[in-house]
Image (tube, rainbow, N blue to C red; front, side):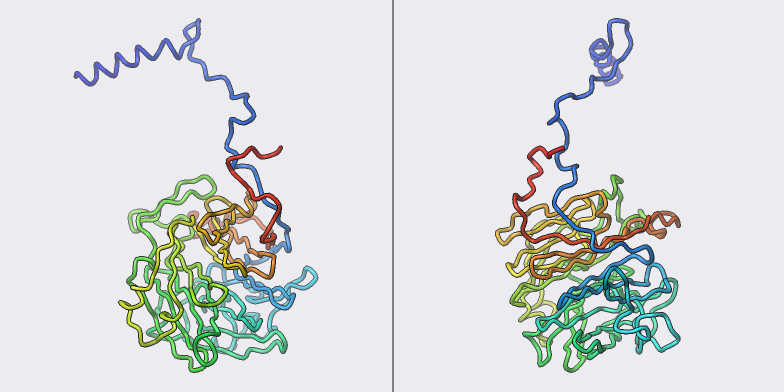
Length: 402
């Protein structure tokens, strides 16, 4: 009763302040000061639209020897187009050829099922992770694999099938990086972000095909729970089973190497933190998870990222689907906004080629599975690029022009 009286008295005290002379409540006058607004809302940073895709949504991107390659996974929508294609003169061509890239009756081990992450090695060769998953179908034996293609010959020179216990029934082999400084022919690091709740890092020796699953129980690998992301202005919570996923979520996903391949950087998709581990440790098959965990460093927050990429100066580019943006983490730990635009929806695969950064925009947060069965994506999907260095870095604390 006492609390109720206090609230009533307080309301009576406030009411005259909110009323006009005639006793009618009035809204506050609109702000007229041009600087009284959120300067981080306006688009910023220069970028070019390299291509518009009206068919399947793009994910992986890699550029080598001036050639652009794009991956179109089939795990969300089992489309009938090429899952790996070369972009030439504004058109897509199945790569390395129609037999491998287009749907067919060939055994899963002999064709590309669902190409997701892509990269190149220090020799300029193209590498892709085939997650093997077709929407609505179980993961078939031989479907998930690491693929190496030599652009000079346009031939597959490596096809390493992933198998149990490295591969789980709910595995989502998402992205990869290739380190030629460890192993007789190099070592591949793969992020299994998982279609369920079983993520891990996967390490593959190229020469022997030897493979293993590591750090599956480490906090740096798992999706954070509970977790809230603001996507297209909607606050969405990831905390199954209480809250069914309503945005793109998962464990370890983004992955990139330092320029000298001594350090691997990675991040869970459902997290805002960035982690690193020395490749001397990770590539050593004799090391236990306990020993690997001792080498992990928490590098702090970097925002919600899908893809990660590194330039020659060791700066890390991180996509951000909460802010329709791409950020850059500098060597001293500071960040710059590289591009920010409402068209940058679900920035996904990201790749640095010289002084240009390429990124695919897949609108993945609008998939039907995350929106009550309604596919809200609106083609075209974009492939964009922007320079690694521009005049006058963006500063969100200063007024934008226009």
